[in-house]
Length: 77
Image (tube, rainbow, N blue to C red; front, side):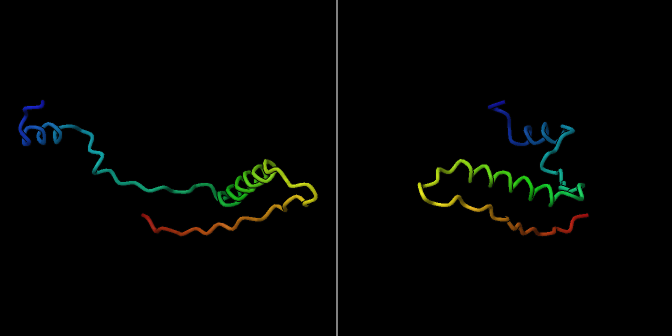
């Protein structure tokens, strides 16, 4: 294969049924509660991070802050 001509390699690849460079796809969110679930998961991560922090003596523990997430809608077929 190291000595094969460029045209030979192209012909072999073109004969194969799989062409990943020609595949197009998009992600479709099917769960209507996705954002609520995502927010809940992010809050759990934040709470764990806050619990793992070592507070200084005499300092009140930090409050949990709500995370705002912006999303963009991409119009796909």
